[in-house]
Length: 155
Image: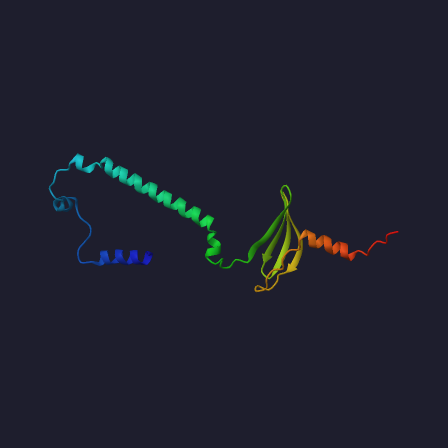
């Protein structure tokens, strides 16, 4: 852009005619019309049109910002160069969470507190195409615990 502007300026200066006018030459080149004050001041229609245009531009900017946030524009654009992803979080207590974060080829388990972050564990991430195993239900965990215990003898 700067190069184009410099090229145009250079071409204007190198032209055959001089671009500099004296005051007399400038006055002679102007049409001899008397200025009309009423014609120079904009009417209310012009002011209203400019105001309406300004409101439309601001509304368009706010609407596009809201849409980008709502549609998660980073994910739609492909997330180029994005190596960090929040997989899942679970609420442990008020203002206490446990988060699973993907960082490159590994998963990090991170404890999130009110004013601190704590690294808990590092796990190998499963392959991209492999489906994640379903989480065990509370019933399945309790049944496994009961079956693993030897039966009690009754008298």
